[in-house]
Image (spheres, helix red, strand yellow):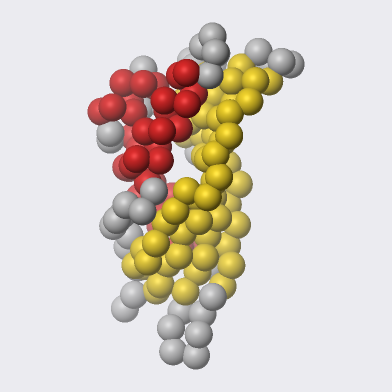
Length: 136
C-alpha cells in the first residue's frame, strides 16, 4: 500500500516546489521530506502519513491522511498563515496527476498555527484527506 502514498507525495512535492508564489513566500523551493541541517526558515516539511484501504469487491482504493508542517521564525503568525493559505490553494480540491492511481478527491481537513516557545518558531500544520483509486 506504500505505492499510493509515494505517488501522491511526489505529486504534492511537484505542485508545491514548482509554484512561484509559494517559493517566493519560502525564499526558494524549501519543501522537504527530510529537512537538511541548517535549512533557513521558513520551510515546509512532510509530516505523518496514514493509509486506509477502502477497496470494494470490484475496485481497489486507498484513503490517505497526510500532514504538512510550516516552520517560520518571523515575528507574528502572518508569514505562517500566508504559506498555509498558498498550500491550501494549491492542494485543496485540486487535480493532481498521479502515476498508477487516480485522485478522486483531496481536501484540507484541518489547519492550525501555534507558537513554540521552546524553539522560538511559529509552527503551522495542515492536514489533508485524499481518496485514490488504482488504475490499470
